[in-house]
Length: 155
Image (cartoon, rainbow, N blue to C red):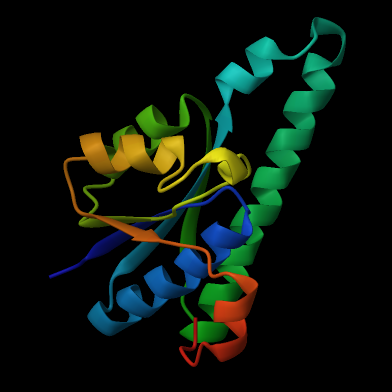
């Protein structure tokens, strides 16, 4: 049913839970796993020009850390490799394009990313991916502190 799973991550706590759930799904179906981090070109354009290069480097470093987290979780969970990629552009557009490129069967993402504190239901990127992605999208919400204390799932 699922041969290729794409995990869209921004390194946030919400994405971390999505990573673990997506890896469980991939393990159950023996699916290939791709992890994608997108450097938001809009954030870069809106940053002051004098710090833009440093900001881009910092975002790419954060992407590397987010992808390393996926790789370590995959190695720990099932012992298989993850194909990783960093793209630059509009996050939703890049996630959807990447899913098409790798012929994904499902895309997994957290519901709230680094800017999610201001979103009520879904973060803007997650919402755009859900609305426009040609394949199913697994959205995983971040648990509240109280929910984490009583949660018994392994994710």
